[in-house]
Image (cartoon, rainbow, N blue to C red; front, side, top):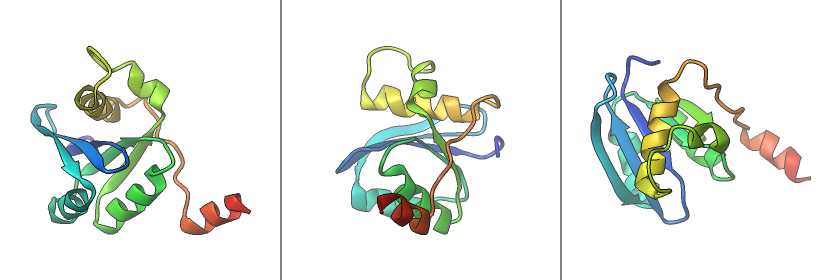
Length: 122
């Protein structure tokens, strides 16, 4: 899992910050993309570790990325905060998610299936 590329996504409503890093930690790109472009990116990219902060939209994007053949890691926002350098910007957050995802001691949050989400809504 740590020997593949990491696609770190800072989730938002319409525009997402995506940071892709190589297995050695070198940044390939850190750019803002739309919702439709994110779907295309996840489908076209080779198998990678997709990391994101845990929030309400995490379950949807994790299920989408898993169907596209990626590994998933949802990280608590408090754990990501320790790896952020500089001001709180979308680009810095995406880079911090990428760094945090590579750490062996950072555990991923539990992801819910659609059925589990429905049961919680009752």
